[in-house]
Amino acid sequence: MPDRLIRIASLFALCILLAVSEACAGDRSISVDDWPQFRGPDGEGHAPQHGLPLEWSDTKNVAWKVPIPGKGWSSPVIRNGKLWLTTATERNSSLRVLCLDCKTGEQIWNVQAFFKGEPGKINPKNSHATPTIVLGESKLYAHFGAHGTACLSSDGKVLWKAQTDYYHHHGPAGSPVVVGDLLIYSCDGFDRPFYDRLERPDVDHDQFVVALDTASGAVRWKSPRKGRHSYSTPLTIDVDGKRQVISAGGDRVVAYDPGSGEEIWSCRYNGYSVVPRPVYAGGLVFVCTGFDEPSLLAIRPDGQGDVSETHVEWTLRESVPLTASPLVVGDELYLITDGGIASCLDVKSGRRHWRNRLPGKYSASPIYADGRIYFQAETGVTHVIAPGKTFRKLATNHVKGETLASMAAYDRSFFIRTDRMLYRITEKSDEQPVNDSAGP
Image (cartoon, rainbow, N blue to C red; front, side, top):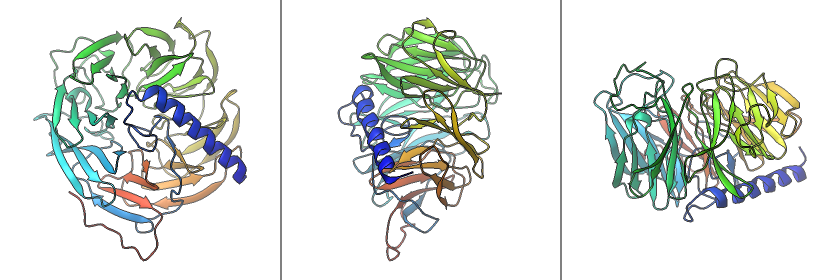
């Protein structure tokens, strides 16, 4: 792809970031350069930073790597030189929030948000600390699915806790979003205990979306819905000057009014266990439909009520991911399936420009950064490609360990979480030693 076109795509992505951040952040303290939620400032995988590394290994361009106790697949979130993530220790009983210094990797604090004597079994590919923290004004919100949700100050004080009862089936997964003074997340559970066999007597609905008051944790609205279990993170968008919260359920995606929880529009599909977060580009919302035979729907979000027969612009029925979220750069939509089939489509029509296999299996969502696209496999491998209508690989990088959490970008660096370590990847001279002694 010519350098001029890459610069144009970078400017386009930055414009998206600025527009979405203004519309959706609900928090003037969050900078576009921060990484405040799952998939970055806009929630759709665009990183505004420049000077990011193209190549690395377990030693090359590693500023530091530190061990992370316990197990968790939440992504790092970052603001003002501090990084937060969650983990589960003590045989998954202690659900914790960690704060690290971005420059050194040193631990600043480590706080227990919840203690669950019997956390129960979940899908072995999942963890009890999979949802990603979302940052608010001087606060952070750590969500652990049916285990609970906690609000903490930036210095580690637990300000409030909330319990939302439902059968989360495969375990906690979808992350929350902040919209104004509301913390919104989806609870698309099962109708009975499954892996954990734990009865939850206060369950009153199998599936619902809920909004908590960010100051107190009190429920501001709760919108029940019927359908199949799901694990997707909502996305906030602006349509004709009005906000919508897009939440992909197991067999129906719904756009909610964030102030009231009322449904604006919905679209039905045949699926369940939806994991990818929706994306919004070119006037279309892109939704993956989950298992068993996933499709991708391109939906116009300007309708009312059930728009299944009227507002689906196009549908893709092959090479659709079960886990990794889509990525849009300019006029192209990029996908990576769990089995490693990468593809590039035209946003408006769904016409395929190319399809290519990348080695490995994929759970992490791709990001677009510094004019390049990064696909991270589950085995510590990251494939870097150039955006464009022709497939062109730029680099293949590798760190040790499993990598199911999506990477973050901040301060000219990538932050990559493995099953045991957290890496800061940055351009550095060979003379600079790797700091691998800091950490918890």
